[in-house]
Length: 180
Length: 250
Image (cartoon, each protein chain N blue to C red):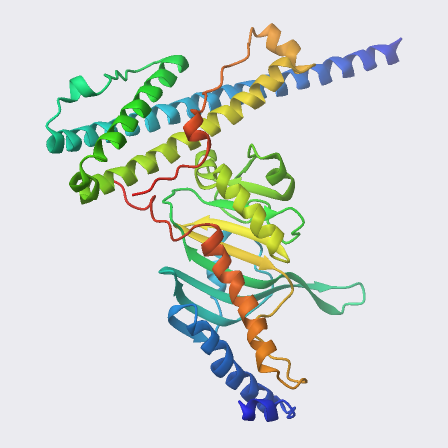
């Protein structure tokens, strides 16, 4: 009888330690996902800032009103992942418009300011891609734990559910290449 | 050149050294000039031990030697390179001292075309001299799993922060590192530190050395040197290090 009690106690202790370990692992992933999410915010803001600088430069050359030519983007705090995706897509569309527009203005295309801004946009896009990949890699590991047995038991008990991925745009899936 | 051919028949230590010096000055250095600019070549000088120590890639052991130090530019990219050998002292049960090799091969330092803050280390998995993310370091390195399954099978990545590892190792860069790994014999090591890319090739080889016991066939010798030079140029060419798109920003 005593032996059975000892075995039962050992099992309870092991289960408790396992519970603590898996809970901590979930917590670590949640923190890492939050950090990666902030990384996306920072990269998105940088991309937005460079876009605005580009619009100003284009405007000074083309005399177009930026409000009529470009889609208006509102970046704010605590945006959902869907809203961030949407904002990012709008930034991409505006950049595509700029790229098309500068083709008609060789002087603008050759200007040092524009070339520097193009390089900056490439750099911030690399930052955004890295932030997205960090986010998605943590979400992937977290989601695997949420659905895999036996960690799924703790996920259920803590009401943890699968998280969404930050989708890559088709054009950004390959590494960025641009001809200046 | 005739002198070089004749010199190979002498075997005294001093003659051997003279022969090597002439070989390196007349054949190796001349071959470098076809590829590189701003060349400084010191056949008897090597890379400082502290430079490798600073990367935290491996324990620098008890015996360190380095030679064939090159500083030059290829496609306007600064690089330096050197043969390096690191050994560790052991005592067996009889009290005899012997040395085991931690690293023997080439160490390269290239200007890197991206700016980053944290150190990132990449080890080929079957390199046993690794200090597993800087075991002797005061810095904290985390093991990073990349999304490329094949890359993870070949390499282990450690970084001070996850973001810089993903920023440096884009999917395209990982493909290129795998390509270099297929082309290059030996264990590949990378360390990204202070905006430089350090590359170690643990291949048990000493480059740019003549075979003093054989008559030199100049054509074959030049081919051999060209193949050794190719190791340097391929890092710049395959990894696109001369692409400076990421260097300047507003």
